[in-house]
Amino acid sequence: MKRTIQFFAASALLALTASRPIPSDVADPATFLTDIKTELNKEWPKNRSITLLFHGHSVPAGYFKTPIVNTLGAYPNQLLKQLKERYPYAVINVLVTAIGGENSEQGAARFMADVLPHKPDVLFIDYGLNDRSITLEKAEQYWQSMIEQAQQPGIKVILLTPSPDLKVDMSNPDNMLNQHAIQIRQLADRYQTGLVDSYKMFDMKRQQGDSLSQYMSQRNHPNEAGHALIVDELVKWF
Image 1 (spheres, rainbow, N blue to C red):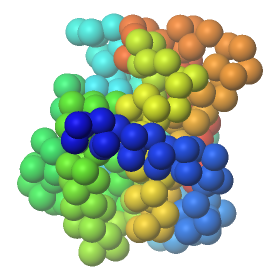
Image 2 (cartoon, one colour):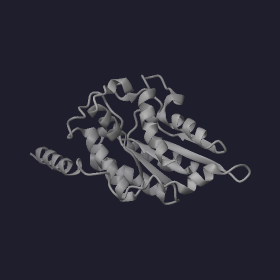
Image 3 (cartoon, rainbow, N blue to C red):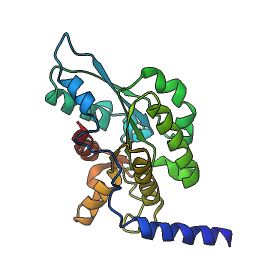
Image 4 (cartoon, rainbow, N blue to C red):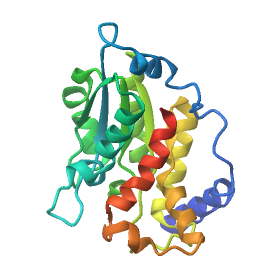
C-alpha cells in the first residue's frame, strides 16, 4: 500500500512539473560564463589555462559499445575541439573524472578527493542515467552535496539531464529517466547553475520522428552523433 501511495504521489508530481517551462532561475547562458569567456579570449602572455572537468558515469567517460572507450568522440573532447576553433588563443584543459557504471552516490563519495583538488573553472555533472539504481531522494542528496562543495570556492557548475536508454519509453512521462531529468532541472533552478537538458533534446528528436537508435552505439550509450547533440547544447554556454 505504501508503495502504491508513493507511486501516485510521484505521478502527481510529474503531472505538475512535466509541462513546466525550464525554471527561470537557471543560469543565463549569455552571462553565466562571462568571466571564463573573457579569459578564453586573452592572448599570451596575459592568458591562463582554463580547466573544464566532467564528472559522471560511462557517457562522459567515453564508453560507446562497451568495452570500447571513444575518448575523442565523447562530448568532453568534442566540446574541446569546438572551443579551440572559437578561442584559438586559449589553453583549455579537459579533465574527465567520470567512471563507467557509477551513480551519484559513488561520485559524491570521491568528490573531495577526485574533483576539488583540480580546481576546475567549470564543472559538469552527468549521473542521471545511472541514478535509476538509487532513489530520487538519495540522488537529490548526492547532487546537492556535489553542487554545494563546488559552489563554495566559486566553481561554475553545469548540470546535465540524462541521455537516452533505448529500453525506456520516453513517450511515458512516468518513466524514471524523466523523473530524474525533472529533478535535475529543479536542482539547476534551486542552485542557479547552468543546465544542459540532454533528455529534452533527445525527446524532441523522438517527437520529430527521428529514430533514437541512429544516435546510439548501444542501448544506453550515445554514438558520436549522439554526443554531438549534447555538444550542441554545451557549446551554447561558451
